Image 1 (cartoon, rainbow, N blue to C red):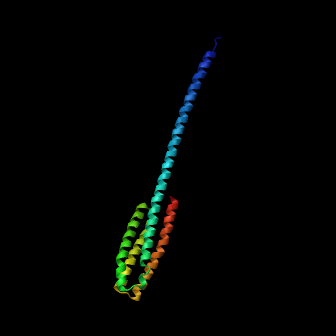
Image 2: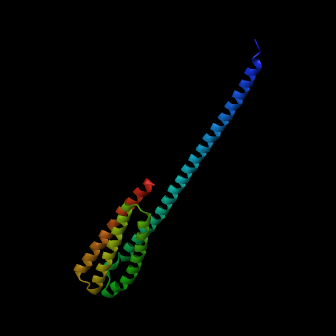
Image 3: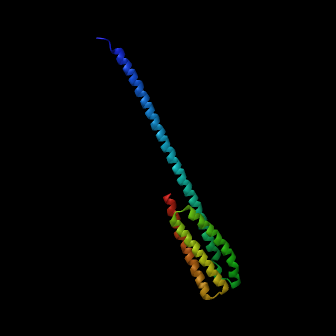
Length: 171
């Protein structure tokens, strides 16, 4: 019987080399796949955080602008017609700033926050109309309507804040 030990040793060596190469190749493929997954997850997390920070800044800007509109009109009730007329120009400027902030909110989304922001903008315009009516005729009725509109506007700030907080929690 011929000695097969040399043949067996050779086959064993070839098998070991092939198995080692295959294991190395599979390990490198697995590591590359795991690396791609990790990079994708990290990129997605960074994008989410970027969106969250951009939205947060836009939401804070709108809250500040909305509060500025309200603060600028709180003392109008006791003003004379001339003083009400003088208060119109600053209100229009604040309304423009609010419109800019609402436009940014519309871009950043989501739609629930955009709707709440648009409601503030619409009511700010209504405040301007009520203030103009009071400037034309400072009747008790016009003053009462202006104050009711101002209170309604102030009440709309909270729904915006709640919608913004919910949107930030989702991102």
